[in-house]
Each structure stands twice: as structure tokens, then as C-alpha cells.
Length: 114
Image (cartoon, one colour):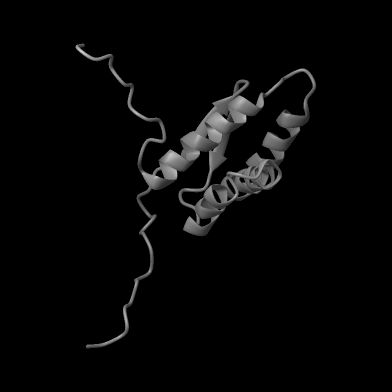
């Protein structure tokens, strides 16, 4: 029995659709895919508020295309266009679901007898 496994070259992104979102009327373009290790970093630091915030900032920097990241940072610094922490978390959760091809929201629980 061989103790070797070839894990291939990763997904073929040639036909992948771009990932985009809109915030305060501006459209932001993201990479078609990201490193799994980046997503693991979000999970690894979830219990520490400081590390979690650092991971979230790094996440946005890594997923947004460079020109869109600059635009995103400018929007986040605009005192007239407030973006709450909840909105940032919602955007990040949606992006993670797009990159992992699964929803991050849990299904709604119906009351018993419904």
C-alpha cells in the first residue's frame, strides 16, 4: 500500500462566475475563489474578539479585488455612510457561503405542530 496521495490542482475557475455585492449603492467585485486557509482563519479566531476583528479585516483585504478593496476601505471610513459591525458580519457570512457553496444561515425552525 502506498503512503502517497495527489490532491490535484484545485478547482478550475475558468467558468466560475464573479462574486459581487452592493453596499451604499456601490458594487464591489471579489475574487472568484479564495484559499481555504483564509476561511479557516476566520473560524480559528472566532472566540477572540480582537483576533476575530483582525481576521475579518484581512478577509476583506484578501477577497476583494485590489481596486475594490481601496474603494471599500474609503466607504468604511466615510463618516456620512455608516456601515455597522452587523452589516460587515453579514457581508462576510454571505461571502463565506459563496466560497464554500453552502448557506451560512440555519434553516428556520418551525413551531411544534406546524
